[in-house]
Amino acid sequence: SSKMMRNFMLRRLGVNYKYIRRELNLNAWLSEHAQNLRPPVANKLIYGNGDLKVMAVGGPNERRDYHIQTGEEFFIQVKGELVLKIIENNRFKDIIVRPGESFLLPSFIPHSPQRSPGSIGLVFERSHTPVECDGMLWFRDEVSLNHGDHVNWNLLEYEHYFHCIDLGSQLKPIIESYNLFKKNKSNNSHLVSQKPIIPDEQVQCAPVYSFDKRIDSLFTSEILHRGDEVLCNLQVGPSTLQSSAAPFDIFVWQRRGNSRFRSSYSTNDNLITCQPGDIHFIPKGSPYEWYLDNEKDYIVTVSNMYT
Image (cartoon, rainbow, N blue to C red; front, top):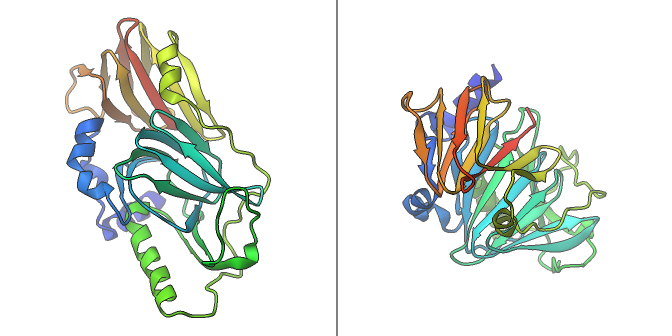
């Protein structure tokens, strides 16, 4: 089956998600994996065994490559600044995402994250189907990539397409291949005639969102982001969330106060207390109960509705 094939490929990459802890404290996890959030890739999956991938990405980095994929990407900046260089309507554009802000990137938009020293961001995306490819694109050195400049696709120098399972581990050899290409000083381009994924030249990105400020200003539950695939909700107590089967993978982040939950994947059948900064992952199809007992209890959920 496709699931068995994906697990086989994960094992070949040295990734074993079976033993990932689903109940974590975000700050503790970031401290534990600080060494993985440094260059050259600075990318570490927090959760990634289902339809929804949640990763932390650190800085600094300086990149000239652009990544393109099928499926939306959702960015929440935790610390430091992210300059997300994108190509929108055939022009280079810089999207600045500061701490406490979020940004929803549509499908098929080439993007190049530039992260400041010591910065940390969360990135959410869905797993890719077996027929979907990601692409890495490099322009010639004389292309400035400056905000507002028109894109000349004839100056594309190098491209590589692949089926993405874990970008953190797959990106390094692709970058090494590009660096070898540059070292050899070839005058030829390394391009693909039949491109498996094409940039969207029509879509317009939504503006950066004041994520933390919006949460602090609300007293009732609200949808914070809704894209074609990504759904981000704020749930405010007193309230109860429960389902006999989660419709999709759900990432849960305790933002304020406390809550109590129980799910079939938990370590025991008792209600588990969540404190501020705790994060959890509810797999698709799992029954769960989540209790926010008073008006000071806030949780944020992020899901990808593409299944």
